[in-house]
Length: 259
Length: 259
Image (cartoon, rainbow over all chains, first blue to last red):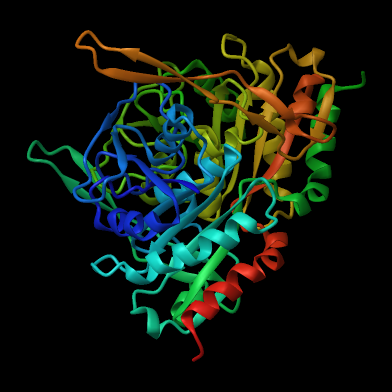
């Protein structure tokens, strides 16, 4: 099995190292990851500047590894298009901090897995639900156990997995749940300050409000101590909404006039 | 009607100016837009550096306007959280170049409308299907005609519209279609070069391959000369995939062991 690993916390993040170490027994692992932290990078692709992909040593791991000035999604494209063999699996993480609900829209970790799915590859994003743990053993073990079934599962082409693991030791996990994305509205405040020259500047702030975290959601699952596995796709069409737009289409069609 | 306008081509892009001019008769228009081009910025939110939002003049338009060093999504948050009144409608564009199929995942234009929907606002992204037109009159007129019905339509909370207008004069449009997102796989090649010191660098390249552009898709509609209106949401859950993951969940549950 050829496994490409990336993340958004940067090449030297301990979560990436733990993931690589855990996946090594499964096959050939190589790494293309951002040279520095790229959290909240979203699904950005770098079209307007040249990208670097420089070989680096990950001490003691003995895997091929590259540092890039690009985003996590860039790293996946670089990894796929420059390697001799396409990866069988792309794993992004282990991210420090959960990626739940609409955080998947902002998350560099998740965007890397989404880019892999766009490239037609099997992929998962793996996160641990804490910003200040140094113990990545539970999510690393989850990634290893999932790798086989994910390769074998009959998934739609446009689908990948978003995996969130509570920050507890493995034997304190209470189970696994296949979930749907909940909703955490945050970034709901802005802090206005003034620089030494009196010009204003702004910091985003606000706390997550778990506005949709009930049964079946990813948020509910991790709150209950379970590993959350959400199948995520990239078809953003709101299929059920089409019929409600008939009036808008009619107005516009009238504006255009008869053909 | 209070209308917030943003884009990803930058505050002084002619497409934004055409949009503001067209929307002015509908109510109060104000602008918060990136100071420079942000194409393919994805849905990035700036958490790690302070943001600027400096007042600027848009010659002759007489609207409140701000230039920001942030992404299009940042601009929407700044616009919503710093204004005295919440916008009734957020319009992003007019983007030079179509935003079709999975381009919505990369598009700064679309991410601005998505952020507005996340903030609970009505929103649409408007693009013209050409990179080298200077005539934005057709998409501007479409935006104006849509504004009313979009405000009145019974849309789900998490839904906004992605509007693409063929680059032809208004009277050459062949109609309007409510569509779903097609698929254009591109960024499928990388150009490796060497800098003057012999170190490699990379440019992404590749041409769009319209791999899902048939009846009902946004790509098919604009190819037929029609205005495409796609309802887009931000629930990325692949709801139909859950049952196919039972084996993966079982393996992981077995790994965790009985509770």
